[in-house]
Image (tube, rainbow, N blue to C red; front, side, top):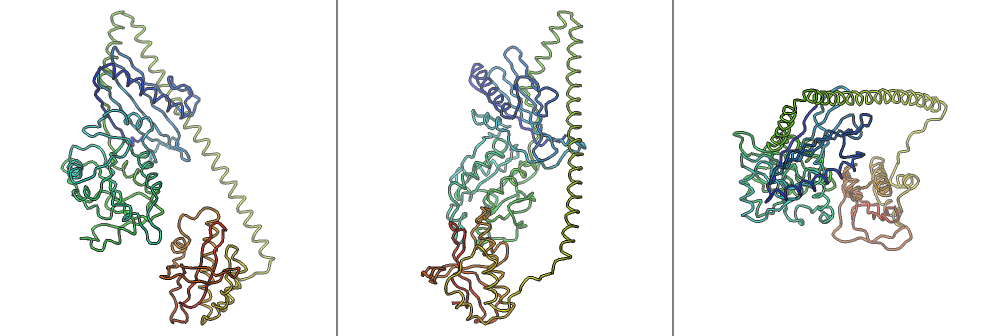
Length: 535
């Protein structure tokens, strides 16, 4: 078993009555969550024949109480088990909370190194009430803001403090018109930005400090935040100084527009918003990859997660309870009862081992069944391939048609591209191009790309503009005109066009081809208005 992370929290309130009331409320929060996870009775251990296992940890000693559980759940689409342990203690006017996340692979007993886990919701709910502390840090399940130079200086001191025990996820509020703007696309909507913050709070809220800073506060930080959207600061070890060896995420367009950076090569640039970030990298992401940052940030937080011991208050209450039980048995002289108590403990551990072995056997049987099914599918696939080859051997072979000129390319596209509409003047303008097979092939490829992108949009899989999708997949560039052009549409009506594809391979002006198009998502079509020389 590998412990992913463990956190210890404390809370002091004004009176013992308030502490006991909070204890009851928090216990209800944990019970409600256990019911949502599929536990039939949150107050008792689960039967040994259930796949989701619950072990209660309840102790009551005079004015002290402990309530907690260990919930063992399979992680979906994997052979890993997630162990969520939460214990809550109350003594006089003090409360303590302990949370531990562990994972184990049952089939071969090899503990995984990177499993997607997030902050348990009951922990985040409890931390949202009261001034809970983790060491000297206050951990909130939601984002807080540090705006202005004074807040920036205090935050800089806290980031560089060797006594800090928890990670800090820093969001740079650089102003939406700056960092969220992408050419021809405008800023992110407020809904997208709030969804990103909510996702971040759900993943690491309560296990790290999420802080948003404005430009004034950012100027006070020792670390360079220019062009950075998200920066993760891990806790500093003994004698460790704050440097740039902490992961960061930057918007592609904004980051590379900063031509006046003091040292633009001080970072190793890693493209793409997903994957495990190297601590020395700035991960540069594109506009549509914003939400894909969430698992990468979560994994980075857990890369150097806190491993904190059980709070002393929980240990103290548990020891007091054990001493009381031993004294009670000793006064009564009931050694047989003491022996029965030890036997019950031994039986409980034995039953737990049996349950784990049963779960391991169940997973092993499931693995054997999956291997058998995979082998059957492979046999069926090989049989189908043999059948296809037999059919192909008796059919005449045909080669894909290659266009001889631009007009020929238009004929091929009109027969095979079902999502394109053709303007009335397309054929006339295309005939003016000094045509050759290589150029005709490029025009045909561009038209097929427009058709494929339109089809992706119809099926709801287009996460970008049509022009952006074509550029990302095929490398074909597009550009808007300073003035709008008018060409007749497929019905002969004059229609305005502002965007065109550019085929750069031309070696002469009369060979420079432009394709003006208008994507119409509601119709599921793209109108081609002009194919011809550069205007």
